[in-house]
Image 1 (tube, rainbow, N blue to C red):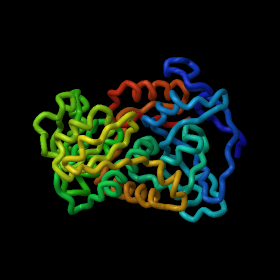
Image 2: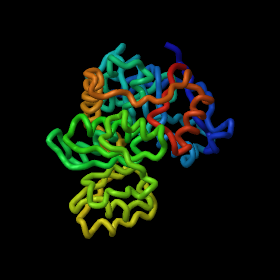
Image 3: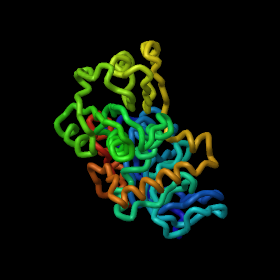
Image 4: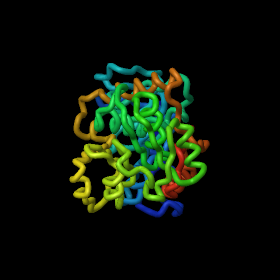
Amino acid sequence: MTNTMKAVGYRKSLPVDHPESLLDLTLPVPEPRPHDLLVRVEAVSVNPVDVKLRAGRDPHGEPAVLGWDAAGVVERTGDAVTLFQPGDEVFYAGSINRPGTNAQFHLVDERLVGPKPSTLDFAAAAALPLTALTAWEALFNRLRLDDASTGTLLAVGAAGGVGSILVQLARRLTGLTVIGSASRPASRDWVAAQGAHRVVDHHDGFAGLDDAVDHIVSPHSAGMIETYARILRPFGAIVAIDEPDGLELLPLKSKSIAWHWEFMFTRALHDAASSAQYDILTEVARLVDKGVLKTTEARRLDGITAANLRTAHRIQESGGAIGKTVLAGF
């Protein structure tokens, strides 16, 4: 096996249109720790966290590799690995405190990995892990919903990566009425195709939803608290997946509305021995292979290169991304 690998990274935080905002690199192939898989990466996808870190975490000249979604093949394993073996096809999002997946070979703890859905190719599978984990944890861990749950769920910005799979999970695995918000015709059509019972426009302040919603999953919470307080029923709940500054939650008090945070990387950062994400991804793969869930891939770029990743970052930064942008092959 070669000692070096292709990768895409950055050395300085720069605007995405700068030619050095993302660079094609050659790096050493890393060595697995006891619970690590060394994965030969076949496809990746781009998430808001990639854009946020590229813009805001300056590596001061050292090569930093982004990417927290991948599908690939296990090349080698650490000596404590029990869940996978070389040759297994896998998909995962990994950990934010380790180098990212935009590399030919990538190390990831086996307990954060699932078996790739057999009915999807690598690119279609790479669209799912981070967003599926986020949506699953939001619905079933934070809100504690299940197949007997009823009421109304509002998925804000439902055409995005998390919203796309959240709508599918809520529609197919709960008894909830699922409302997705979207503003453009293309995004409204996409949300309807994911299974939303109803699509509303978030630009009109969710008119007509006053006291009609039991649960909200929010990727855009800044400036929205009073609106959420108005449309939620008493004793409702919100799960936020963003990081708004200066959030004032007092408008939620009179209705005793609960506020939850969802951060998919919490398990990797603080619960290292947990295999919960292995369990979730294994179930997601099973549901995909049964036809219950589908990929949220909306656009595919041929080649994991700096140029293509700059394109994918531009799409993400536009604020109008639908589904997921995936990149396949080095």
